[in-house]
Amino acid sequence: MNQALVVVGALVFSAAAVLGYFGWQELRGIGPAVRAPSRDIVEVLEHVNTSGSQIDFPLVLPENFGLKIFAADLIKPRVIIEDPRGVVLVSIPGEGRVVALPDADSDGVADSVIEVLSDLDRPHGLALECAEDCTLYVAEVGQVVAYTYEPSRLAAVNPREVALLPTGGRHTTRYLLVKDDQLLISIGSACDTCLEKDQRQGTIQTVPLLGGETAPLAQGLRNAVFMVEHPESGEVWVTEMGRDHLGDDLPPDEVNTIQPGYFYGWPYCYGNNVQDTTFDDSAAAAERCQAAVASRIDIPAHSAPLGLTFVPVNSAWPREYWGDLLVAYHGSWNRSVPTGYKVVRFEFEEDGTVARSSDFISGWLQDDGTALGRPAGLLARRDGTLLISDDKAGVIYLVSSE
View 1 (cartoon, rainbow, N blue to C red):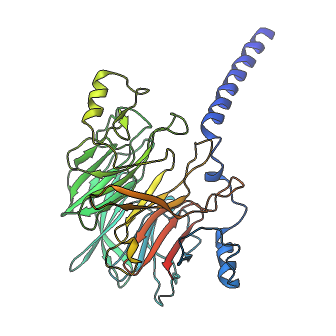
View 2 (tube, helix red, strand yellow; view 1 turned 90 degrees about the vertical axis):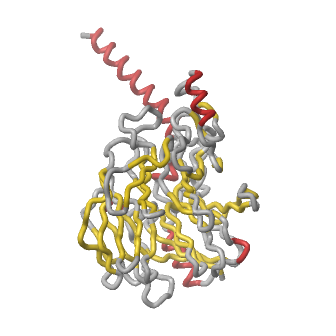
View 3 (cartoon, rainbow, N blue to C red; view 1 turned 30 degrees about the vertical axis):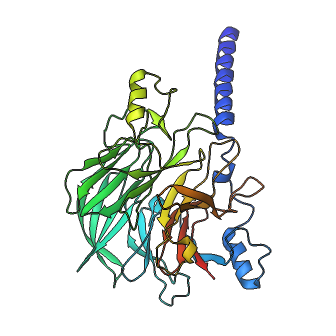
């Protein structure tokens, strides 16, 4: 009996040691992502707006820009789009809803939260195509559904299936983009690093707007959570999160530009065609890496880039921002020293290379190891404003130039 107890005790101790090491190695930086902050950013911003004092303003913005709450009390809002009347539509994956946020008096604060769709399976990607009528495309985990969207009633009716998608696995968000009479669908990988059983995972697929079988547009993309079309070149740009378990500084997260039919490296390599020898150190894998499309922009590891948007040219934005790229760094959960939790601006040379990058908005990450919020979706509008969804604080921010 005593010997059995010793064996059981040794096994329990070993298991605890393994779990403890894993927790220290992988989760010691998780605090900002999961801990409640010491201050509620909604209350802080309301106090600032009421008192007029900027002393307690928690976020750092460029000179001549201001920020306020456009909508609050949302449960992890993600993707933001606009309808033809300028009404904001937002996906709420955790609640299975898509909501509208009208601002009838144009005061920069949503008048109400109107439910457009409900009882969906973690809806994420939204796309709207309007001619005589409007079609709203919604990406759930296992399907894309099209609805007739009625802007006057803020209603989505007459659902029809557009595409069936793979389910299960690690990454369940799907993003949508309408381009050239096709619907682009980003589908994350089922794992951290693996060879997929379902070849649609870790890819961007296309399907006709009327529906049908999907076809691969680009492969080797571990988790391209958000997409945007460049307003001038028409290129599709995506953010992509790198794999885990290579330490604090590897691999870089990425921004990629999509070329139809090409392979982007995952799981064999990352960044500028660097082979992931931890996964596969073979000569065949090295050859695949050399043939892959290198990243357009490398981002510090574990920054978790999500929403991206280009500042419209010839818009009400300050001229020096026209054509710049803004990227939301959702923030790390498995880096010993947390990183991200900000929105970053990229400026470009005439040849399209990055001239410089700088923080556009920072301050969500607090000195006490908590985060006031986590920026997720972005939408730069022609009126000179920027909308940011925050799926930790449960708000939509409105940023405007003063």
